[in-house]
Length: 216
Image (cartoon, rainbow, N blue to C red; front, top):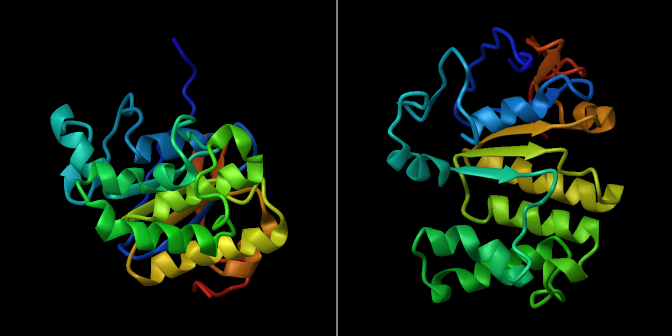
């Protein structure tokens, strides 16, 4: 039997909230995010999202819920045969949007993250930092109701990292709930948001280290 990674984890995200998810390597941050974006179901307990019981939700209804969640994966998960533009546009294509309705927005977003000159480039020709920016643009392009990001600034320089975090902040201001898993203490102090801290498989809720629970 596999060892239990998370134990008795319980929390509630208010709509439009912004939280950091912290913890040492192996604490269970990625496992918790996987449960939240429905990559796996819990061995026990329950998860509700957008008013639905995800544990007992019929599998056929999961795609509809997943479309409301944007995810930034540590390993990017870009599609190598698609261009930068096509990778970012993919959530909109899946949702049935027409190119004339999203092309301008995709180009604008890629320009904003510094990839306006790489629209036709494919992932194998991009650096790790560039791939991370494509992955983040893809996660936010459809303006999801919930954004989950696993170490989103881990492969970019500080200046680009600040710009990417600003994307998350602006999306939060539009009403999205945001959860960012990070080891970056400077980022946690700078943004001033409450913390979900995983320690030995259990979750502890902490206020912002600055004493303010606001997103700048």
